[in-house]
Image (cartoon, rainbow, N blue to C red; front, side, top):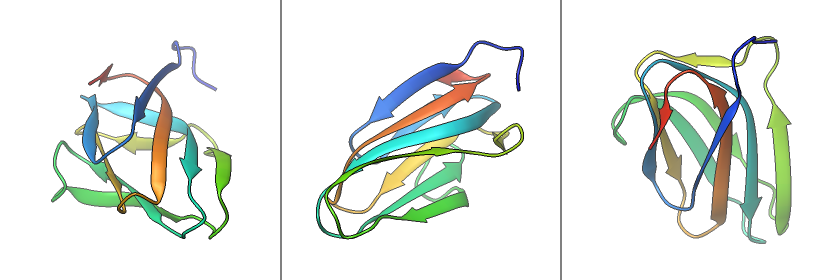
Length: 100
């Protein structure tokens, strides 16, 4: 585990979430009863390279995911790309970088 302070940022729509080099260590999200996707992109725009895509179950609720080892490295920041209104919020737990 990191010796750095873990930070958190929450987004409810497609958005640049974290600026600068960072590691995402965990994700918490809420969703409706319709299946949706969450894509974390390496950069600050929707056109950035996808490093992680999650598909949610078609059941309303909340889920959390702890990423193994030291998480996923995003060397150009993180853009959160969510499908429509199915994903109601995404919280990223990270170290390094700065919340946007």
